[in-house]
Image (cartoon, rainbow, N blue to C red; front, side, top):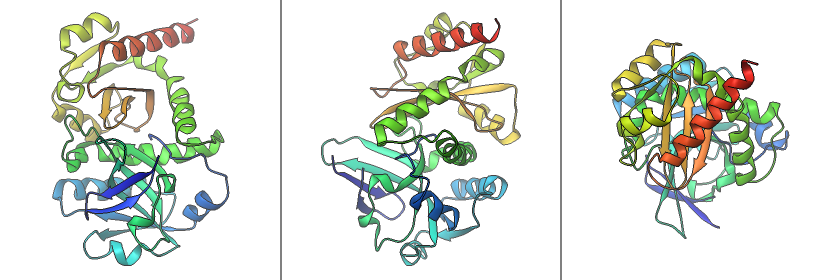
Length: 288
């Protein structure tokens, strides 16, 4: 299936197919070239997003040297540089579906234009909640520090676990890896933002089917937890694009401690039942 990528920042399409990586690394070319690169963090002229990603990269990005560039002035000039990599917001449409994949993506440079890139050129990516509370891409700015952290952690996990294969195989293996940690969720309060989960689930339904402590809250509460590095909560993050992803994330470290993929645009009762069952089972295993 051919993919068409469009960079939301510059409205240029390019052909292509966290929390995820697009392919399993060969431990050679792509990853090794990235490690030797300078990473160009693409700023957007959106004040909130730019401020937060600059702060996050300065705090967490230790894997390569980095520089900040403006998408209008610098991106096209830098893109051909084989010694460069890029961290930028993109969306991806397919020829076969109207739904979009939206994410913060990490790619190597060295191609003549964005139109030359393919999906497998993404080293790692963190999806956006496109159909719900992040319909405007920049609305992810409140959690972009965690997105940067999860991209870095994804790179580490794929290398450490030697995860290999195509997009679906890598996604499946990463979800399996993240889910092994789910037992820890039972030890903290889970924050849930109604705007993030959609109309198929309300607070009463959630608490009726989730056996551990939870609080429904506004997005601003989660934003404060992330900004303060609070380690007494986890938060639920639903990313509804062409594929719906469900994550539970540590606001302090950005660590993913639960993951799942399913169809649909809203967090469903089936999603909740699977999440609660997984957490409960692993919590019991840990307490044996």
